[in-house]
Image (cartoon, rainbow, N blue to C red; front, side, top):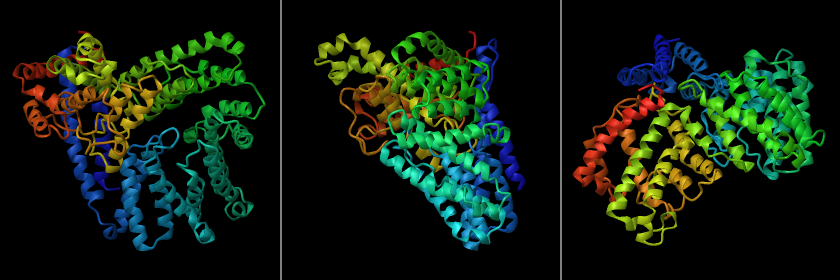
Length: 607
């Protein structure tokens, strides 16, 4: 492998260490701030070096010009970058596999085409973001298309070597990836694809041809994926689907002692739960038995275990527990109320003790599932939103800053133009606005605090400070506004917090920003969203302490940009506040002093 790739990997790991510092509670405030700032500057330098390496060796390479040695080096690099949910750099793996695939097509090398179709598809699958019902699935069609193309080589199966045959079977098994499965019609379509793939994977003809291929693992992975239909069964009484899920649960349970260690991604911790849940939907056991099984899993897990499996057992298992608790008879629910409440409190303590800056993809997904399940079962705790933020320090710092700045802007707007807020919080007159100014300011603060809560879906990209973001990653990040909207609707913020999350990246005039193709922001929240949009840009662009992926702009430079875009990107009424010398001076002081205070608070340093 090219030594420059080794350098990239070394830089990547160094930056992750620098951008996730762990501080002693007794560290002096000045030392902490200087360390964060120094680390940010170092990260920026590493990022420039990494971008140069990638530009030279990946982004600017013509597929047709790659030599055999370069192909081998790129392949080794991509394989090091990608390891499913534990990938070093899934995005770069995707880009390298894409480059290698184009080269293989030019050369007409079918074995290489199959291998790189699989690599490109599976890395894009892990790069992609998806909503719970698959309504948000920006790269789902592309992922399926790549897998299906690879599976199409089954027609020439006998002509390939064993390694290529394995990739054909993997593509075939994954041809159901990213398929929605929330309605009876979607499940029917999913089953057709599943049954076709499973029919080939279990066909004795192929087993006799290549007995050494890991057929058991292929089947196991297929059965694990079919268990995702449990989510559908929690909302639909469907005996046909329940029987299919039971069939997979029995197969997984039978093989539960297999595929451990290196196959941890197959999520063996869920096996006993999956079996009990499938039994419930097939009418073989009660909801209470499912809950008892989950309680046993949780209670036998160390509350200080922050491995991926520990995170799933301490958090994801709780979300499953809530789903089946509501299906128990009232008498069982009353009898078990203390135990289930204790588990919920335990999960909050667990989250509160997540090691500083340790917020993996697994934590992100687990917390999201916990909040979604609470909302679905009618037991949502708004306090969980805070835990989503607290466990990811950079987003928490930004959210607290934006909350304070939004309140500051709104407070000044209420002084100068209270008529702008008629309609907010049900106020029908200017006088009602004046009487409600404290409540309006607090609403502005909450909108700012939770505006980025949807980033819990894309934390794997937030603070990606070792290279520039890929276009594909930025597309995924843009969906955080919609994810945040859905999450906040589920916890009772449909009329205020949710629209603020949805529209804070939309231009004032509606002709730019994201998300696109949504109706205009509701008038009853728009003045706060207008202030939030400026506050968000202001903090993001001027953070000179911990923003590792760029260098902060001087405040005066940024104020000039606001003025240049008033009436288009930014609301004139908000930008006009910046022409007030006293307010502008206070704003600069607030940015400096408040930011220091917030960093100290978030990183838990005694002052």
